[in-house]
Image 1 (cartoon, helix red, strand yellow):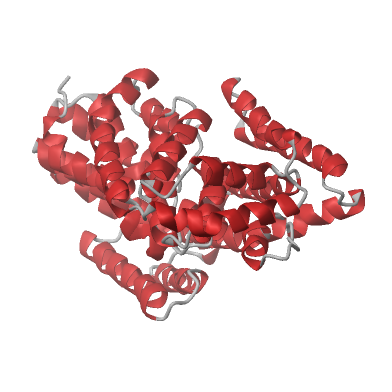
Image 2: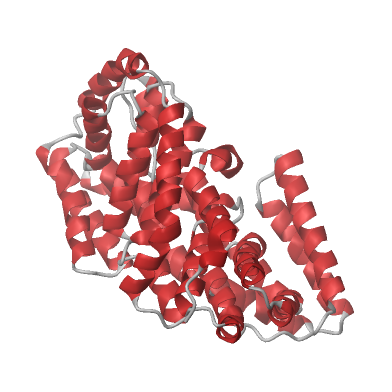
Length: 454
């Protein structure tokens, strides 16, 4: 059931106490002391090592647990590096500047946040990747919000909400495929079933974003200055749209994300060598260090100075620490103990649904990894659902509602770290406005008792 074999069997009380201490410590350091998440996660690793050694677990086993935990995120780590390259190459090819410029021309201030949410959701469904959506169209929208003097927190919340709506509903999404596969549900049956909770969450979120949107006058006041500065970069050409079109084509043909991002990045780089005026040798430095804008308008310089492998190192280091920390939680038996206790004591339908959602959320908070949240919760509760006569569709829906969308709300989670880095908005700042991500688990817990039986 579990990816790492526990070397100790702590009591449930012992596991819960350690859980509360760890969550309390991480929350104190991040919220009260405002440290970067690396510090409390590293302190948590020290605490778990001390606990493991006190329980006669060898250091070799503890170290292997950390390594195995980190190994589960290596696919994401390589993808993050490539997204850093994609951002810098899309800057110099003019793709992101063109998206921002077009946004100013077509999207006014009326219902701005709602429109950002809706468009991001559509792009998210099309691409099937919340991270790619955030790193491309999301970066463009956050730039527009900055230019309009709109709330960066609400704009980021709208972007995250739309991106993760797409992550839930797209047949191309890896989390959607994982949730359906792990419990043996047809992919399109799964998507149809999750719409019962996803569509209401979308509608409520859209209304909330529409109500919070700024007046029309806000965008018109400063948008022209931004557009003039964007044109002055000489990065925007008709070819600027080709890397985006190429990425969409790769998605349609279901080319793996790593390869698709690589193809789009290389195409953008080649196009930039002809259109941007940047020396061929300097382009490769931009791949690592990112693009630095030098216009006469400082806000545009701040907007376009992004990307590069170097910009992803903060994210990568935290992901490795967080997943290594998660590995220790398994090898010390803390997470297996809590999950097995849930599994043994559930009988009523509503308590089963709520416990499934709580477990998926808890694994996200403790480990910071949405794939493990889906896999562990799915494996743990399959037998419980079968015994209660609940359909597998009910389980796969709950996994998506509480597993997929919570990760961007965890400051040390893989998605949360990445999004905060790319958008420049801390997780705890946009969290109250990520309405869709907050509503999805709430709706599934409130109305989960209506789940279809077998």
